[in-house]
Amino acid sequence: MKGAAPRATNALALPPEPCKSSARRGVTTAAHMQATHSIQERRRRRSRSRSPPRRSSRSASPRRDQRRDDLLQAIPVEELERLKRTCSQLSSAAAAAAAAQQPPPIDPKARRFYVAGYAPGTPHQRVGEFFNWAFGVALEERGAAYGGPQFVTDSKPSKDGKNYCFVDVGHVELKLIALMMDGIEMEGNSLKIRKVNNRLDSTPDGSSGPIFEHQLPQLNLKALKIIPSDVPDSDRKLFIGGFSHHLTTAHLKAILEPFGPIARFNLVKDANTLDNKGYAFFEYETDEAATSCITQLNGMSTVTGGTLKVKYLTRDQACTT
View 1 (cartoon, rainbow, N blue to C red):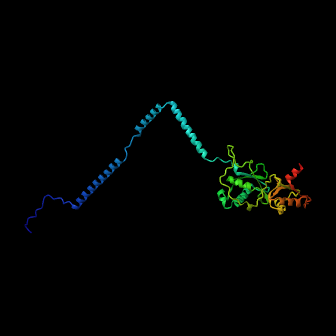
View 2 (view 1 turned 45 degrees about the horizontal axis):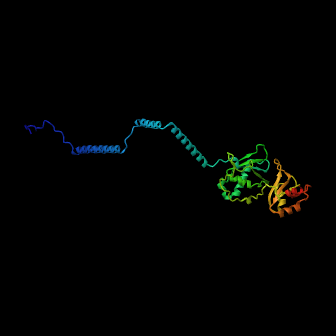
View 3 (view 1 turned 90 degrees about the vertical axis):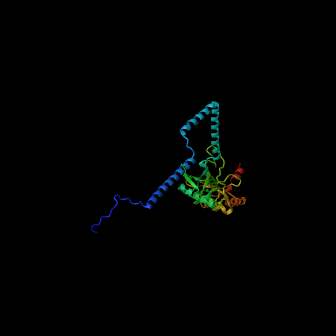
């Protein structure tokens, strides 16, 4: 409106009122931080009160050493020496007791046996494979307890190049079983199985005696058709000679078995060529079979022009002496 005076305004502008929600948020945050700090402080105090007080090892160690030195100085020298000797004796006795609980070591030869009589040129590894088979047949399902099917651990040829070898087995009992297989046939030849150094078991300290890891199980030796080759001197030991040098063990057994079962048989052969030397020793299971054999074979002519001679060995020697 013309001529109207302008509206009056305040000279000083008042600041805007603070937002109530912002002020309330600031107060809440500050209170929360203070409460959190109080909780953490209480937890630190509680943990310090539960943990044991730390001790300084630097300050305690010299005192312990001093007490120990004082105690040692208070003990007479003779008493200290006696205590040392007693401790040494106790240590030696404990070591001896521990050693006594352990089984004595077994000489490797206690698990080794001698084999001869196989065909010349046969590798000694082939002999080991043959005994793996023989042990498996004799032990059957019980062979697993003796390391089967690999019963043989090693085989060694003779150092002089002759036709024999040594076989190592994993258990002493296998050596005993091998000795019971004396006379077993391998590829048509009767094997001769013997102990090494004429001893069964021994220990490095010189003591001897059988050391068994297991008891001998029931064996199926009949399946191997073994006739032992060891014929000891007795009244039943028979001698046969005058046959061809090319006859084998199988040939002679075929001649002798019709008179009765053979208990033992040993065809004497050349160690290198395996040709027989023209004579053998054997034994029947019954005297009747031996008498019949002597009656029918003694003096018989052979196809090579020779004459068979069959007799009791020891009985005839006793009669002539």
